[in-house]
Length: 280
Image 1 (spheres, rainbow, N blue to C red):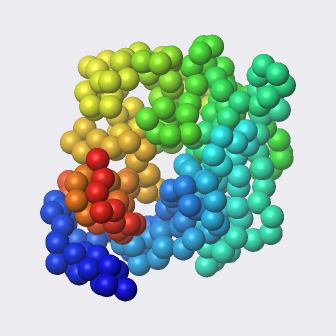
Image 2 (cartoon, one colour; image 1 turned 180 degrees about the vertical axis):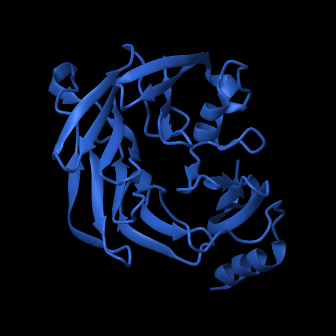
Image 3 (cartoon, rainbow, N blue to C red; image 1 turned 90 degrees about the vertical axis):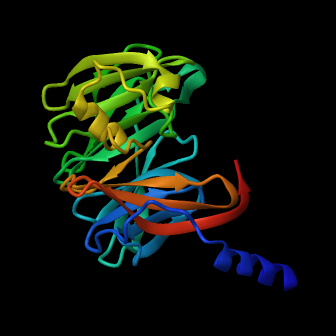
């Protein structure tokens, strides 16, 4: 009991240095997965609803807020939960995978980077070096585009990512191209065509040093913005805001979700997830 009181006192009086400005938008909702479950949260943090527990990541809420897609650790299929108006999971989850993506030993390769269409009727994801779409009306998956062998997404955002362009016409992809390379693509799902845009060292991107040939739209979609780059930004439907994880370092380090307003160029707090005694 004494130890708990001491820790609580430290949390109350230590304070926290932050450059954020107030809270985010109350009427914007998004999903996140942090390894202990998937959640739906509002932009100001007033709603933070746990949908289900488990090792889920890369959670994405559909634009109509009726479905949530996410990736289970090292799984070969996308898990999709149907949600009611209170963000409660309904019925059994649906599974979407690419049956043609078997690799050596009849094992399926992992899936990653789910992305909903604007009408919430199609779900796009990466499976090995394939771009796959699941169509809710046709109830089937289709392979839309094949990237070069050796290029694939990843279940963490430093290994790969896929996001829509602001106008919704292109899917921008960041793929792992070996141990030290990242490959960037712009894919048009409507035309089933892809264009390579850059091949860069992984170290440059980890330091957010973008090559001149990397299009501004790619940077905005995959990293939020030039002035406030982050890994794995979660965009609001109107693209005004994006949300991201922020992990501090040092004593009493906090892990938070923050947001950024592209219009006002200001950061804002969403919610504090946890506090560690020390984090590197």
